[in-house]
Image 1: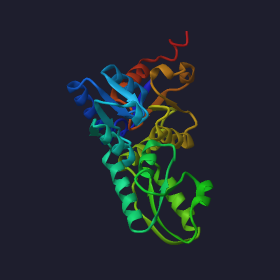
Image 2 (image 1 turned 90 degrees about the horizontal axis):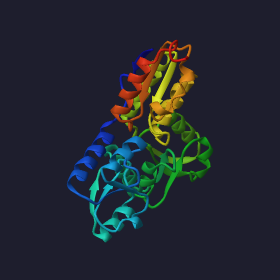
Image 3 (image 1 turned 90 degrees about the vertical axis):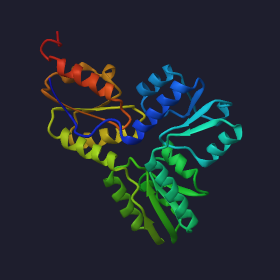
Length: 283
């Protein structure tokens, strides 16, 4: 089968940096924790787990050792509690996520109501919420009722949202009742490039595969965008998740991957897909 890989896909700088930091710390120390999964990819997390990284979800589960703050960041209250415990803290927060946190803090200091366009259950958004006293998270237009009327609104966006969604939400907010609106674009350019590259490729192939953690927000978004252009789009964690029946009758496959998908996952998938023969493998 002919396979075309998207020009932009796989690890972004923030994820690559977090993985590199984790590997370096694990090579030096015995007791290393990650406050939440370091990235949203089970294959990568399991590999680091085998190297000794212990993933916990609550600060209370940590009593000693070194704690890695994952790429999505952590709320200041969590950092403060870790400091009280006297543990060694290593910050692997993506610099773009840190930027969103600082902007939110500045908005609040300047008297704006902080509004975050994104998924309230995503750890990046939760960390930003934790940086201010009172923020409003809006995922779509059904959340607009949360916004206070005639307020000064300071708007940021979850870094991995699509530009189209960001624009639609700004338009919806703008049609509402507010006194002042201040917006800073906090979208990740690398995420945007991956989205554009994936959407372009999916129009040129018979079947499209989006590789990455099923819980990864940026990977899910890639899959959603591709499905709008090519109904034969499938979001898979790795090669093991593929039902080979969907390949029959297809000649050209496109492959992209989320920003938290390791290169070896992509390489293995592409190699197996290229070796797949629809005539021979049906038997």
